[in-house]
Amino acid sequence: MPRPFKVARVEKTDAPDGGQGQDWYRYVLESGRSTITGQRCGSRKDVLAYATQCAEQLNTRGLTGQSIWSPRGRKPAAAST
Image 1 (tube, rainbow, N blue to C red):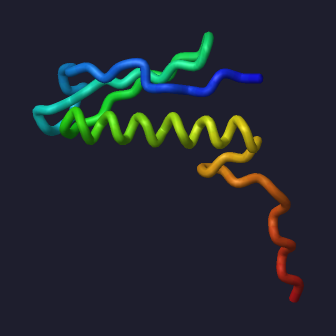
Image 2: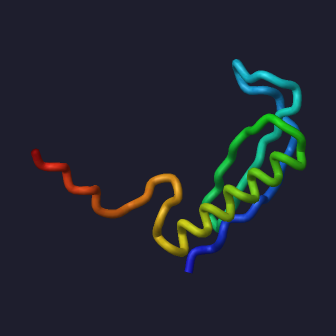
């Protein structure tokens, strides 16, 4: 059984090249041996909420085998003329 992702940390960081705004945070999601790192502009509270939502979505995808970003399934048949 895979380990669920969780927010490991959220820490203040410099804006990435070309990034606008002053408040940038780096978030880290961990699940056993897997680590996902991202950056987001906003308040620490907003970035923590975003990272938590990402972790939940990844966990849902892992449990169901389906992605909310890329739904799987048969493509609709092309309309015949």
